[in-house]
Image: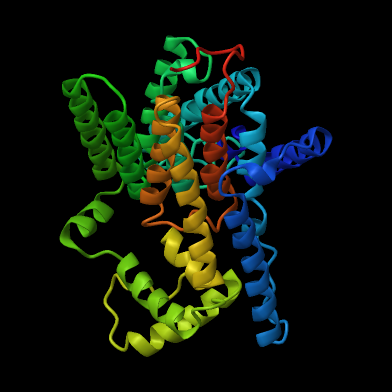
Length: 384
């Protein structure tokens, strides 16, 4: 499943199905994992919202969204990755996929973007946002930001050698910069800053690393998307109109939302015409989601769904906080994953899309697996 977050939905869903089969055989006590009941309510409310929308619109829009059930992936990961052997295997597979993905991103950036199976062409555009093995550059950027956050933790957390983690840090940072995804860049900086703030090391080195990351990412954005960067600096951001219309949409149906993405698109166009009688050039007349994770959940499934989602994250953070003295590195990783995904989600709807939603929940499961490793297990040193 972790490998699938760097590639395509079929790969991550295949891993999800295999993990479910393993859980059926092992029968772990997933109901005892922090956040279980909140995320169960989150998934159930989404199904209720979809059913309400289907009845309200005479069956016009019915959506089989993966967000109904993909939260289960963090429970499976948390149960499996308490075993340091499986955790080492999962991270090793993730890092191997990272190498291939970043190599594809480099080729796409410097050789040219193609529409063939390899997405590389000498006649294609160069110096454009790279996708690696992912379906979209935003997905690739978020995946790189999350891998970068994971790799910034001490290698002993995964039972790996130091050079392995350093290689993953360098490659994920490179892929993260090549994606030119602004939300992912902000989230990556936030995730690494959280790791730095909660672990002991030289502040001078931390500041230099952050400065290098921010400078290089801005340079690549200016190279690949100069118009977008100038719009952002001048305050002409197309997402402002999307957030404005989405907020009005939420007020019209705060309990159950639209119930589906198709209904969101339909209502968005109507409300946009009502609110924007004289739209600016950057205003978006159409949108398929709210381009903000928290607003998108509320708009599509209602405020209760957002409450359950946030409460689930908070319960995981509180559990990690109670374990901070015994598992300092795992505590820092848990907080950094939540911060990274939340900051990335300020400009993109991550929790309502397949690959990016798994990119939130699977790292959370990894962090919980690190927190719950029992003393005396082999694989990596136990923190005191």
